[in-house]
Image (tube, rainbow, N blue to C red):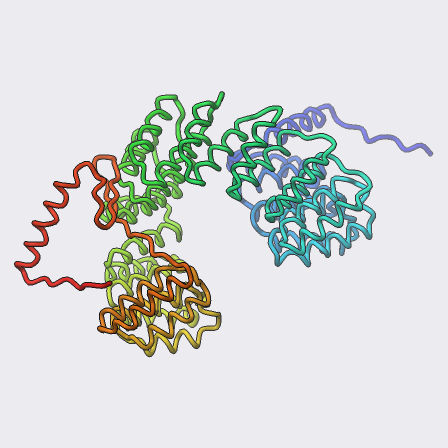
Length: 600
């Protein structure tokens, strides 16, 4: 008996077409209200178990960051197929719920639904880092068991994931690449990209030269590897050989020379770029700002705006970060004024960057004003303000802000406690700092890391409790690093602990034999104690190891220009007036009884 196709009512057919049209519109929709309306219409039409409608809705709710609603749509389908499972797995990975994605994967198998090539590729995208290597190996075993290695899409995904799992992962990626029956451009690019990220530039270049065909991505991958490694001669040679250069190629070279400190080459290439988008503008402005060249950075920022380019969040955050590190308050204010002039409101990320910039530049009132104006504060907002207060010695205010943070329902993280401990250190609040250090793990479940130990050792050292500081160093669950020993050496200098200082230097020399700062500090300690033989021995030791102490420098920003000074420097055009002013300051200090400490 021949089975007849079910008769569809004309109204149902038109309704179905309407729903398909609505569902196709959801592909890039982030309007939650609209997605919910479509979902309600589908439920009303009893199409919620439809294998076309359900995946579209899961993906749409995922795009709106409403994963619970996406799971609810999935759960309404009685017998989900592989496509629907894959859609949910992808949604969970995109929403950073990797463990849930693997749980869905295991349920999929338990319910008798066979994974396909997309299933494994989606799972592999979530695997990045050394700790993920066993998981990648497990997925690889599944892939071989079910015969998906013949689909080039899958081994390409495996190579990419293996390459992100450290040295052992790179080894596995190379083995897989070698035995592949067929390779396409993605295979070559994935392997070369993995080698470049792992620092294997020589091997990556060998593969690059062997490639049967090279697209722009391949060239840019090698170019980026050389630039990030600071090998700008090799980068420039490759850049000149490129058959075609795009904005990425030019931007990579500008960035490479900028990071290498060669702003002349960076500027020359920037000027020659045939097309400029926000990326090269961001690179050149940030490059000048990072080197304290406020005038040049400011001019380029103005030119960018004159060119009609509106800075996005990434550009603004990058420039503000450079201002924060170099102390360029003037440029930071200019960027802030530009934001207020062109934007209705700031994102939380941009506001956080402003707080950080103002705080690091010492403009705490401005930092607080921006901080209080953030509608949706996150942990970064609180941490930036806490650290700003702490570094500038406002320990009590920092602790009050920490209390307010908890009252408003924000849970402190490890960065928060670095800010709190740093605040206690700079304000001399020893007991308070020890209290917070001891309650980190007990009350908040945060295991102290080396940075937290460093803060507490600095706290004890500055407070003159050197014996406690030394005991803490020896009881640390991890090996003390150069920063820890350097902190102790600084405390020994403050409190003239000559014998302890010698022990500390021995540890520092083992870890960083070429660091001149350690020898200089010990020399000053011996000089303060009148032990001139000790000073001489340190100087001899410095000569024997080839260590030289660079001159210290101070800088100040005045009228969009940064002025830098070193000891006995006479290169500044106004040096005569500067030294006259210093002389007057010294006389005034002597009149009020100041006696300077003289170190060798």
